[in-house]
Length: 379
Ligand SMILES: [Ca+2]
Ligand SMILES: [Ca+2]
Image (cartoon, rainbow, N blue to C red; front, side, top):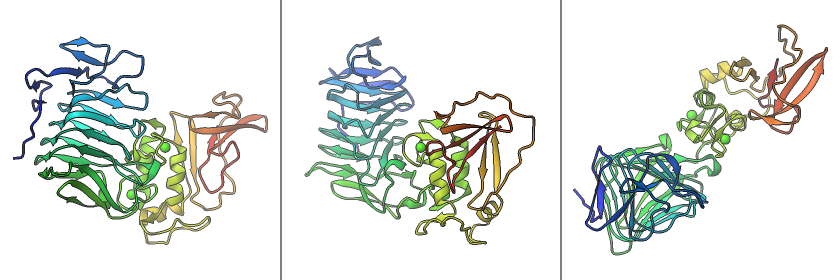
């Protein structure tokens, strides 16, 4: 089995870090927070005592539990070593500017290193991915996340690549570089598991100095479960994640703002019942009968869903003409749920009065009832 020269590693199944002699270590405190927000206390511990500085030159950064995020306002200096294992996760965000490490990067057993699109983790020497370690690059239109090593790369059997698509820059068919090793160095071993690209995954390519992945087709809009078709299964993903934050593409965030809401529904709605290579149906068109039995059944039957948590109903007319709708029940005198002309709960609301009772309607375009898309009626 390939082995890296390193300064230490997290023992599998523990949070214990075995370090080489003389290496000073900062341990992540296990919280979900940023590496070190500017001018705020850090979440790093040295010999069990909180430090007021993030890891700097000559200090190893060890994350064995919790989620450590490197963002645009993060105070990072070039640490000696980055080691993520145990149950820890490090995410280097798209807006971070990358994360430089002087010597070694270890993705140990149970650890996950997430690197966003167009973003790079660089290490001056070697990269080692242990069995049970997860490298999670985000795939965007122009590039994936990248780990660039200044020396050898060691990928042990049982390690995983877990891809993350993003709606902010949907990926195109093509080849994306995931890892590079310096000229004159080498890449030993292969990943055992590839997850997160569904039917779009084609294959890994292991070159002498790089690991890349080939994506077979452009990511289809609204295809949350990555089966190359946008249908009711993807709607169900959106529906079970709606109005949630900190979401990814596979949780219904189709526009990449990390919130799953009506804007994402509208993207699904535009592409519904189409597959890779097919254009969306135009207004007034219905999907071909028999092409997708579940889709056709829904498409010919406008529906209505009531969400008790929000007191709202979605009407799905699926491009059929909905000319009227009767809502039976007691008169609404005053609801005071939303204010007219405000954006709340993922909608712009307008208030009107009809027959002496208040009514609201919500849309995404500043208050007018949207055409050929979803709208909300409050009673
Ligand atoms: Ca799908
Ligand atoms: Ca979204």
